[in-house]
Image 1 (tube, helix red, strand yellow):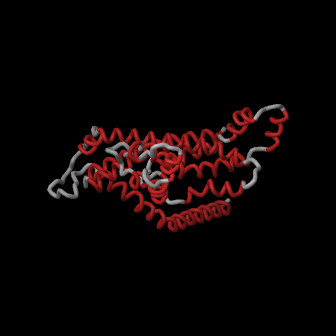
Image 2 (image 1 turned 120 degrees about the horizontal axis):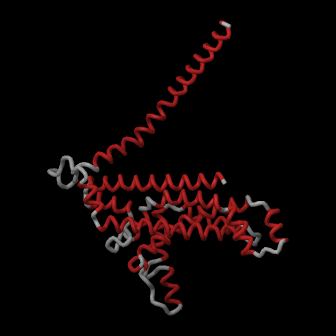
Length: 302
């Protein structure tokens, strides 16, 4: 009995030692992660309660919730929230809807399918700033842009898209960037669909529309949920496209929450107000992420 007890104690000590050794090896990585993520978050939270303006050193001290109150009562903040929601929802509708249709199309056999797949995925590898510059100067310029040339060719007057439809234009640019991602994920999901199931539906007389809504679309539900989750998290932080094309204008017509924080910090030099906006953005992003993760988890459990 004593030998068994001794062996058990020996194994327990060995397990404790292995656990301590593993924790010691992970300590540097955990420390770097904490310094990288927690310290900026704590400083942002701290400055959000301070009077801190880069061009007015006499303005300092504890501000309480004044920064939050000023920001929440600012009409520009409400407009930026609305623009953020419009941008996220619009891009999701275009990328997920178009991605689903293109995934189904590119799953079919046709001449040049390999080249078409490469071309449709290519925009995803273009940097956001470069994409915005291409669309602004090459495609949408009201004088020498491609779209202006096409409109003049048919006798129409070219449109200054960035001036007349700033939010719609930014949405179009961002959707062009994210459509390839949706196509890539959804095409992989379409290709995993059982061929026998599609053949059985075809033998039963189901047409293309019926097969799409009753077989393909339910099969894609999990992949669509994943695409929506990943895109939403990134779309909440869209900045480069707005900065390069419209600079948030005209007025605040195309200002989202990320650009509003930038303008508060680096254009108005109000670090306290910008930090309060950053905290609000973190809260919104975490709420959206938690909701989306639960929705994806429910789809995966089905």
